[in-house]
Image 1 (cartoon, rainbow, N blue to C red):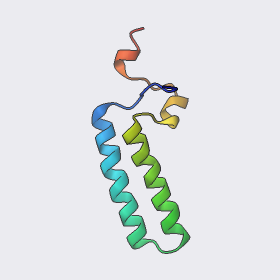
Image 2: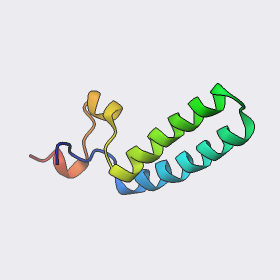
Image 3: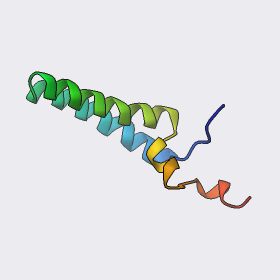
Length: 70
């Protein structure tokens, strides 16, 4: 793999749930381009939960606890 997971398991579950709910709500309540942009942003959150890697967290140096012992 080209990346190291930096999102813990409990946060991954929350990201997946909130991403799916956010995408559905943005499609239902926001019309036009705003709904599409909101759904794409929520899809990004869902993907980071599924993969376990968040680019924004990596940029600020976030690592999982077991990785910091090295």
